[in-house]
Image (cartoon, rainbow, N blue to C red; front, side, top):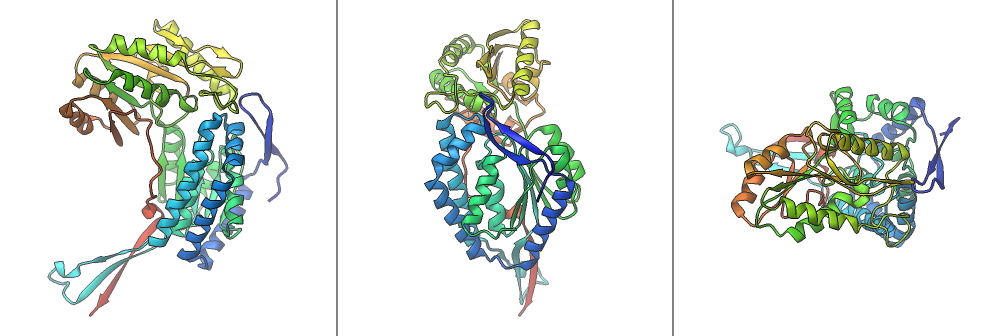
Length: 443
C-alpha cells in the first residue's frame, strides 16, 4: 500500500520522534479486506500450523522483550518497568492462543434425550466466523493487539487491524514478528490512520464478519449501531468503583488503590477511579491515600524509577486538567493535579458533586475521587449510579458483605479485597470467533 500523507508518531513525554506511518484511506481498507477474504477462502492454514506460528512468535517475543518494551515506553509513555510486564504478558497471550489452536473442538450432543432422537448422533463443529476487523486503543499497544490477533489466528480468522494512530509502531512490529514466525503474509493487514479515515470504513465494510473494538463508550456504541448484523465484541471504558467497609485492612486497600488508580497514568479501562469509603473509615482512608499518592514518582518513561509517566497527548492532559479545575470551582478539595510540562501530578479529589465529569465520566487520567457513605446499601447504590459496567471491587473482612456486593453490584466483574484494576491474561475464549455448525448423523 502507498499513501500520499504520513502520520508522525512522537513520544508523549518529550515529543521525540518514534517513527512514522502512512495515513491510509477507505480505499486502502478495501484492499486490505479483499486480501483477508482471499486468505480465508484458501483454507490452507490448518490448526497445527496456526499453533506453531503462535508458539514461535511467543518464543521470539520473549527473546526480544526489551526491544518491544522500549518501543511501548517511547510511543505510549508507559513506564519501562510496566512496559516490560506488558511484553511478557503479550508472549503469554500468544502461548494461551497456541494452546487453544491445538485443542479447538466441537462437542457431542446427546440426541436420544429427545423421543425423536434415538439412533442419531449430534455434533457441533467449529469453523472460522470470518474476517475480523480489530480496532485497538492507545493504551497497551502491544498486549491489547495480541488479545485480538492471538485468538483470531487460533480460530483461523484473517484480520484487518486498525491500531490507534498515536501508538501504531508496537502493533506493526508485532505483526512483522508474526510473519517472521511463519504467519502467511496476507493473513493480517494493518491499516494505519485516523478513526474517520480508516476505522469507520473498516467497521462499515461488508467483508469483516466480526468487529472487535476497545475504546470509549460513545465510539463503541456507534460501532454497535453501524455494524448491526455483524458479531461485535466491545471492551469499553469505565469509572470503576471500589468500596471500603469497616474492618477492612486499610493499608492493603490504599496500597492497591495507589497502584490500581495511577498505574499507566490512570489510562486503563478498569483503572480505579471512584473510592467509596464507609464513614467509619473515611477520614483515615482519605489521609492514608493522600500520603500514599504523594510518594508516586513522576518522570521519563525510560527511567527505571518512574511510576507515573505522561498522558498519551497534550490534549488528554489538558482535558483532565480542565476537569480538575471544574472540581475546584465546584468546591471540591483537589489534592495534586498540577501540570508539569507533559506530566500531570496524581490527584485525589475529595467528595466531588456527583454531576461533575471527574466523578460521572471516565477520567482516563491519574485521578481518584473519594466519597463517604453511611451503610453498605448506600455504597452499592453509589457504585451502581454509573453508565459504565466493567468492574468493581470491595474491601471487607465480612463474608456476608462480600457476597452482598457480588450479588448487587451491577458490573461484569466484582473483585473481593482487591481493586477493580486487576486483570489477568487467561487462555482466550475463541468461541466469539467461531460459529457452530450442527451435523446430524443417522445410525
